[in-house]
Image (cartoon, rainbow, N blue to C red; front, side):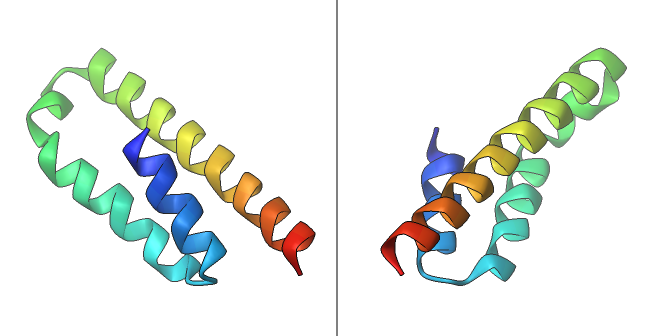
Length: 66
């Protein structure tokens, strides 16, 4: 939830280059989970889906506001 809010904020402020920082920070924090393949795949798929959804919603919001 927090990552989506940050992503939407960055997209609304038109700073999309800050979005990968969320992914990197989250990867560093959850590095221990990457040792188990199932959890790593689950984590990556969930994060990618969440950030993709937030980016799309951010683009739509910017289109509506502009």
